[in-house]
Length: 380
Image 1: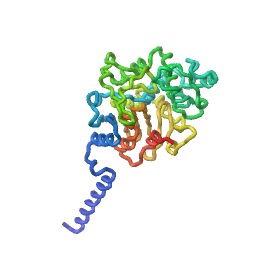
Image 2: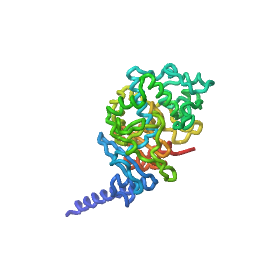
Image 3: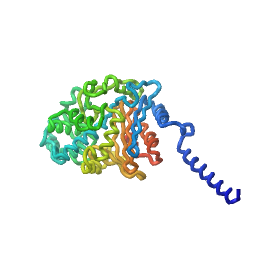
Image 4: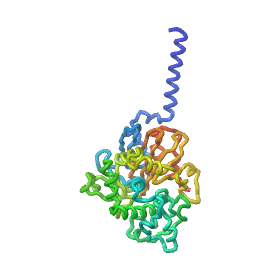
């Protein structure tokens, strides 16, 4: 071999070695050979999470993953265990409202009181109550609290409701606002939330395990008594399935990662609401300062649209997300249009959001972590 050819060969070998070494630095040596399922197993073991279910889509190809600790047995076959989706309930409901607006059944900017008054608001604030619109509800600008009291309590439906801020003045995350809009939607359509969702979303998309209510197998193949996950608290104690007393568009959806990924695909393709309504949904309406009056550094790039959050990311551009927190059930979806990728995961643990960085890094492969992790987890 000539000297020039030898030098060329050595250069190629050195570049190959350097490239692989650089890649290896981002992976724990003992874990780089593991499959994604095995890596998920490691992630939840370190976080003391009994079970995780994931749907990941890239270039229209969806992959499903499930992992569980040795001490927890999934109640259903692979990828059929049903989880509480918590606030991921809201984005599906938002798509229903946007479909109604598209079809002229509701005006997003018309006072909701003209459809149906909110009699739970205290007398002194009924003028403010009369200003609320569907657009304010979906973008969390109602000024209402998240909940007046626990929404699963017997007293909640008749509890008094007071504003925290004037309507349309600030981001104020509110399940109360969503439930009020649910009542308006049910009154307009003359059907229950579950009837509407099943006809417009679940059945057309093949979301056979999804419901805002408790299913017994009569209307779907999923018998929730048999297939729903148990939730585990901060100390790792089993707190059961967690039945909800009534359908609530803000937090009572139960579903699987596979089902929810079907919804995400239909929504972001425009098939569900139409392109124009989707564009309105994805416009930033308000800076999402999660704790009003106590702005954090992570708030600066987080905004809210109509039923969905968004982050301006230095590498990926605008990404879309929603997080869910029912205490012992935590969930998240992330959509990265610039990469044609999206991810949804469900856990049955109080600790389910502690793994956001680990999960997004595993699937999106970036050192530029999403600020939404700190936005969800950092308490001022």
